[in-house]
Length: 169
Image 1 (cartoon, one colour):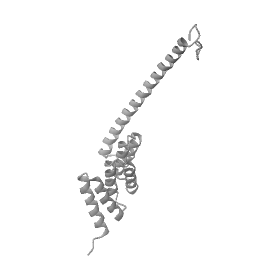
Image 2 (cartoon, helix red, strand yellow; image 1 turned 30 degrees about the vertical axis):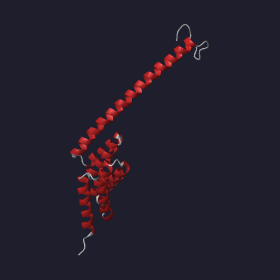
Image 3 (cartoon, helix red, strand yellow; image 1 turned 60 degrees about the vertical axis):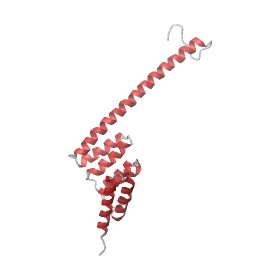
Image 4 (cartoon, helix red, strand yellow; image 1 turned 180 degrees about the vertical axis):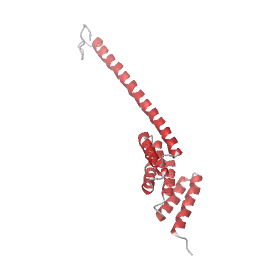
């Protein structure tokens, strides 16, 4: 007697899990894809394949699987967690935070999501601080260069481009 489709899907999923544990992500993706072809409504397999895509830096594909998992099981935190991981890995912390917050709306007691959210918020703050520092330094450098340009133009040119009043600025 032949195996049922569900058995075939589970066997492919287990082969994928084995390969993923060995960090053979490409092989795991092949087995997870086989399982998904048989049972396209298994959100667990989608989040597992999403992780493998993520480990291979295939952010677009990882994100698509995470989104499909969320669509299939909107009350399951793992889809939101995986979606957040993809954005985190791509340094898109605003989107990452949003994914984790949506997950926490569905599963407010999920400790993994809570910790991931805290970590993402810290990274976003670091990124914002770094960007603000670069902006501040850039403005100061621009100001100094502008002043030097005007002063040099005044001193070195017989006809300054920006004439400065002798009585002051």
